[in-house]
Image (cartoon, helix red, strand yellow):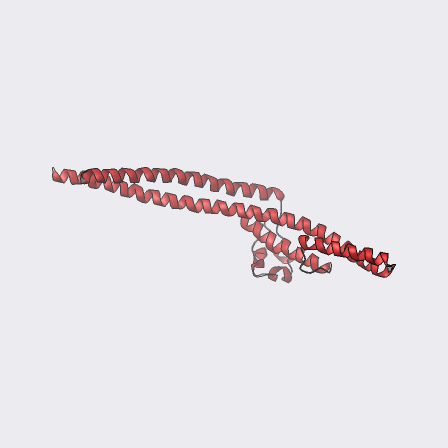
Length: 209
C-alpha cells in the first residue's frame, strides 16, 4: 500500500468517525434539551415560589454556607434544577431542622423518630402499669409531639427528595450538553484533518506526475 492510499484510508476513516461524532452530538444535545424542558415543565407546574428577600430571616440566609442562594433566587418561580437543589437543601432543610428543635427533638429525622416513638410508647405503658399517672401523661405528651413531628418531617423529606431528584436529572442534562459540545469539537477537528488528508494525498500524487 503506497502513501497516497494510506492518506486516503486515514482521511476517509477520520471523516467517517467525524460523522459518527456529529450524530452522537445531535443525540446528546437532544437529550440535554429534553432534560432541560422536562425539569422546567415539571417544576414550574408545582408553582413553588421562593420567599421574597425581605421576608427571609437572617437565620434563613445564614443557616449554612449555601443558604445565600435563597437570596439569589428570592421571589422567583422554581424552574431549574439548581433552584430545586437550593430550595430543598436550604429552605425545606432549615424549616425541618427548626421544626425538630421546636418540638424538643433537635437533629432528629423521620427515620430516627421511629425508634424514639417506640421508646416513648414503652415509657407510657410502663408508667400506666405502675399507676404513675403524671409520668404517663408526660411521656404521652412527648409521644404526641414526636408523632406530629414525624408526620411533618415525612412530608418535608418526601418533597425534598423529589426536588433533589429533579436536580439530579438536570445535572444529567447538563453533562449531556457538555458531551455534545465535545463531540462537535472533535468532529470538526477530524473533518478538517480528513479534508487535509485528502488534499495531501491528491496534491502529492499530482506533484509526482
